[in-house]
Image 1 (cartoon, helix red, strand yellow):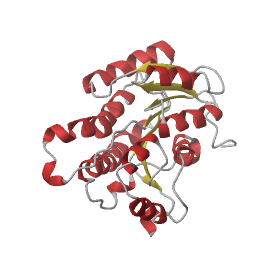
Image 2 (spheres, rainbow, N blue to C red):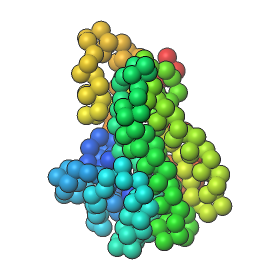
Image 3 (cartoon, rainbow, N blue to C red):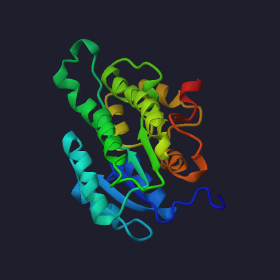
Length: 253
């Protein structure tokens, strides 16, 4: 491998592409030569993203990830239209803050559908020989440090993200013979719109406590995107079924 971080010519599907970590990931992999297939429900956000990506060969697709049964078929259609995929990044996700005693199914079904079940549907779609390149590829699922540590009010979100790690471990073994690697990235608190939405309910003391819990400070979307790009590239070709913690020291403190 003379260029282990090169993604030139590889087609990468990224969910949640219109904002936050998904958007930063699209920008990073495009700068490394990849052709981005940006997926989101935000049509205006997708249009703005495509206008800013370096390189050529990029495309977008509107997709509601709650429509789980449609995801594999949509991925086949995307491959037929623009070429097979070398990678998938599931960055789309929604948060949930509520005490466990209030967590009726109607409160967490969307969280599980988008954060977890859509990830499984994407893996199922990617492994199709019409979708994945013959040589294999890489799937990166955005988990969270909340899958590794507790958080009051975070039961539904933590549950949805912890499941991704189990999914990655088992699916990695299943698809290793095909050259398909499956890993997670577990970010700490990253300065995104989702973070600001959650932080809006905190007082000044709570916000300071969260910030101090990250010895290297809060993360930026680019920090996570760099980790994702590493797991997509050949530099990580001997890594599968793993979780890369990218949290500014949150879980070490």
